[in-house]
Image 1 (cartoon, each protein chain N blue to C red):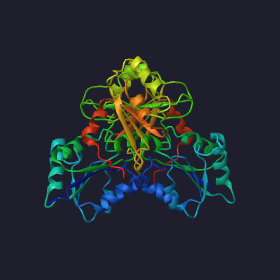
Image 2: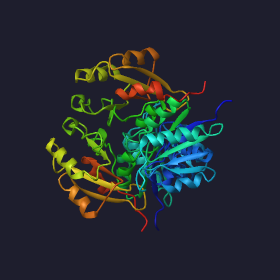
Image 3: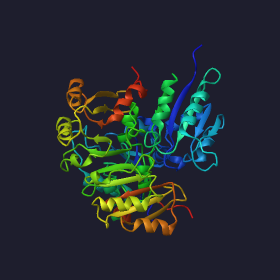
Image 4: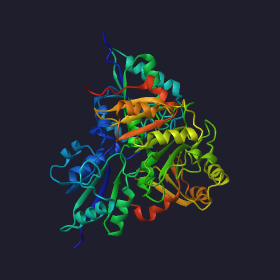
Length: 248
Length: 248
């Protein structure tokens, strides 16, 4: 008997339920099982009332689910019965710090066919919802996306000198150290910087400052994860290009 | 009289019509005028039969439309009559080398309110459709996106040493020079590299090689723009993670 097992890795986007793609929507509507994340807005689950839904977020519950367990559960759910259609729904884009690659590697090793539905990454969209384009003619012609998490050790900022715009994910907890490192690596303390908390959602909040002031600003406003940090001259464009007004 | 003029800057994604977002779909359905790009798949226009549609791509027609003319046309169309709802539909994400920021600045200067609908960027999705995640635990914890176009001068590759994955947009024409520059800047000639032409579309083609061989490979296969170049160890994951089979 040929197994129907199939895994679709779907990027849910930064949070706004309308930033889901049409292909992501279709995958949810056709799913038999949906494994979803902390950052995947629960509003997405309205698209798959027919599916068994399983929360596998690593935050927000007291029980911490480790990555190998998620991989194992995903493979197991896909192989159940004569094989099932599993959607793995992840915040942002599944191939940007989402460990989506590892999850697909687990599928490949188990012989389960899979596909990827790319999503809108919060690395680009959270700044966009704060009126900040990552590139802009004359101001920025390159950007880099890094993680501020220390899980794999700190980034080597000194060798990023020619990247115009820096985007730091998972950066709020260590923002004071990170901005200090960037200044130590030669970036101007006066370089504009912004932190966007819950980007694209009604609860979005934005802190703006400079490399030397942004950590204090974030602490003063009490911004926390999930948040995206942007560093570069493009942050100044927010004055002209800000457009998103979260509902009161 | 209050003008109804409004501009929505919409990212259409990398090409697959199903990678449009739900919010982008709604904007098209509500549009009175749609200004669309070379890279925005014509299939998107089926969503807006009610709208006046205007091609403003910079390629593919003999007449070359310059950016200031696009800005002017967009403002003019928004101000017509009692003001109109204009959608500016762009390939990929509108804030990644799309000059979307400049178009919104023109709106701001003309007093026209606007909004942004972030899109799936081809910088991430084209590699994803070739089975290449930009980050992967143990292999890559950062990526940078640059343009290979020489319009604003060449990138300074020597100072990108600590970025694990490089994504080069608009890079095919100058690929031989760019890969040469990267090797001269200290990257290993054996570093895996891939070029994805028309990523996410049925006509997608992929060339794989190393920094020293990829330019010849691309020439041998005759790949051309639009194409995305990826350089880094993550390219090797394609062997395990490739999934997209373009229809024959």
